[in-house]
Length: 311
Image (cartoon, rainbow, N blue to C red):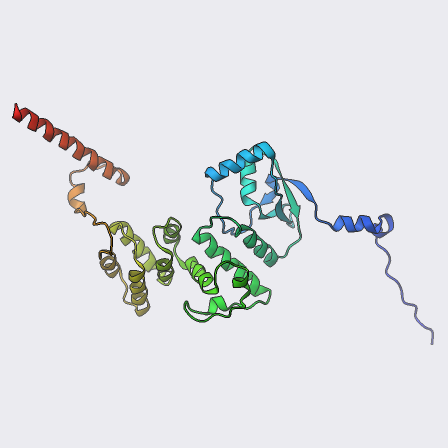
């Protein structure tokens, strides 16, 4: 029986016309200038890019020195690129009227891209609670896809978490604290903004995240009406009433209207009585200025009247 000869695979054209050193160099990452219009933002990027004083300083630095640290991007199937790390540098470059930005192009899976995006942005000095919340959630999901354990999503606050959780090991926050941050993603946007603005403290916000969406909107209305946010103790009560199915707007209003320790007393007025003497077309945001100016005018009138009577 005749033996069959094994056929060797044909060499690629690159192998025929390039040296091994040239092929190795081609695989190395290089810094290339990419047009800003060809770089899309990372989907659902959790970190905010704000045009503030710090951004102005970055813009001025780019105008003078260019972008010193290359951005990291990955190629897209449509020929464009997706930003992994460098959203703020890209925005500052746009403010500086630059057309391109130096980038490192790297092939990354979706999960790899999420992990690098989160880790690179976590190096910033100031990170908002909402940024941490969604960043931790995205990274946890990416690690879960890669076969890592996901205890943080299955445990309640206060329960024991395994110390070897990969997310906690690579973060400055403990596993329990990370879980608390992830809970903030359950808040409606308006309440989450209040957490970022430090109007609602972190721990009360975690408790409020367990309220149903409609309950959170009722809470938002009561916060604006009472000009008061829940303390930690009040937030725990709201959570318990919600769990029992006994939370409504009246109960929320009653709880928020309770005075807290060290709370500055607030003056309350009958809204319908105030509006009855205001111009009908006045905007809500101008009511306070109108009332204050009216009182100032009235006080001046009284002083003038007293001076005339003293003559």
